[in-house]
Amino acid sequence: MSAALPGLLDESENLSREKTGQIVEPSIKSGLFPRQRIQTMIQREMIVAKERIEESQLQPASLDLRIARNAYRIRASFLPGGKRTVREQLDSLNPEAIDLTDGAVLERNCVYLVELEEYLSLQPTIFGIANPKSSTGRLDIFTRVITDRAERFDSIPGGYKGPLFAEISPRTFSIKLRKGSRLNQVRFRRRTSGQDEHASFYLSDNDLEKKHKASPLVDGDLVLRDGVVLSVALSFTDAPEEIIGYRAQKHTSVIDVDMVDAYNGADYWEPVYKQSDGRLILDPDQFYILASKERIHIPPDLAAEMVPIDPRMGEFRVHYAGFFDPGFGHGLAGGRGARAVLEVRSREVAFILEHGQMVGRLVYEQLTEPTQVLYGQLESSSYQAQGLKLSKHFRPFAR
Image (tube, rainbow, N blue to C red; front, top):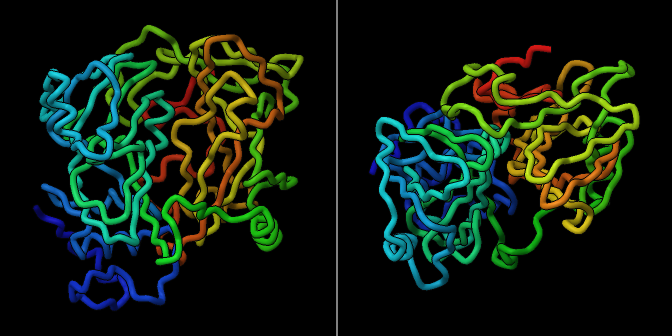
């Protein structure tokens, strides 16, 4: 397996190249790895792949994962548990094999398991956290990373050595993907010997208040509740008619996940207009794209993740892909920041949302050091300075 990455590793610090079992010097503190530390992991063959890892996979504080050739249609989602590999569990399900070399369609409401190109060989103090990419969530593709002997999704334990798999279930649109498509990303944390990998690494509200005073984390007032509170925007201006969201159509053509600016939004989405009472009724089992009222800023030394306020606060799910790289919305002209796009799926009953209603919270995490490349400085930064925005697959919606 080749992990060569020519031209990328020269910018890493002058760490020892001896394979001593340590990825970083003792001076490197705990926290989330920035891009340059992930590069060092590739250099040390802690991340390897059958095919060369591409520079475009490296994000400011995460690594895009690529789909391999083999996919399987399965009856149901599963976790292998503490004693079985994914392959052992898969073989017991008599799966239908699918070759993705030239592309294949994954049908909505079906469950698939795919192999990923990347393999890991982590040290005990390094562990991983996976999540869907932003574009994946905006297409309502439910996807989670699975490891051998996993008892939790999207969680890669310290010291893990083995392959990675992804469960994929398109919920609204049937999708086409192929070998090399990217639906998931992984982040890496380093913990000290005294830290448990399940402990919280998020900044406290007191720390966030200090950060906000030094450099605003959101525009307007800062509301804290174990993180920065985010609310939904059901109005952006004083105009009587404006689009405040999009509702997915139920019967559409297939979407190729690798195509950019390829589809007319009106063929897949219905605009949702502002109501005079400032409300929106979520229809059962419908998928919506909405936006936060707040504009957010992620400083260069932090990353953030959107998590629910409390699942008991409403009959809806407010995000699929909730990770924000360092630099998202930061340093934009006028300090305006960028809105968080909310991927909202209602549940069994209709539910009323109101303008400014709390829907999530943004938890911030310290990087081991500032990243050398910020979100917005890469070609893959599709959503910098965004307002209400569909995924990159769609051309701007005709108004």
